[in-house]
Image 1 (cartoon, rainbow, N blue to C red):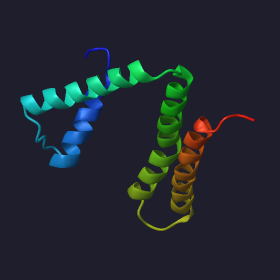
Image 2 (cartoon, rainbow, N blue to C red):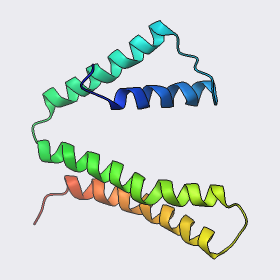
Image 3 (cartoon, rainbow, N blue to C red):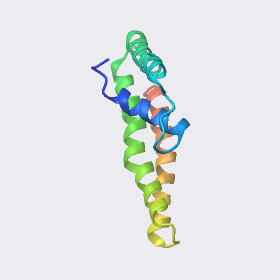
Image 4 (spheres, one colour):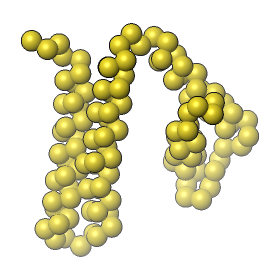
Length: 113
């Protein structure tokens, strides 16, 4: 379990999503179950994946697009709610990320000619 540092972030995200800001509805037993599910699912995916390129490509397509396009545009638009050109450009950046992500994932599964 110590080999996967992203589990803490995923568990905290789930706790805040269901409990609100500053509250964690997960007790010790629930944290253990959620962590065990994350670890078990990741080990299962590692065992059944035949192509490591596909795994890294999928993780890169989803994570990089989210971190570089969607989150910055969305956060800028939420931080500065008054309508102005930069806000519309930020929303365009987020929209571009929403288009790029499924395109990149689709390109992973389409065989090259």
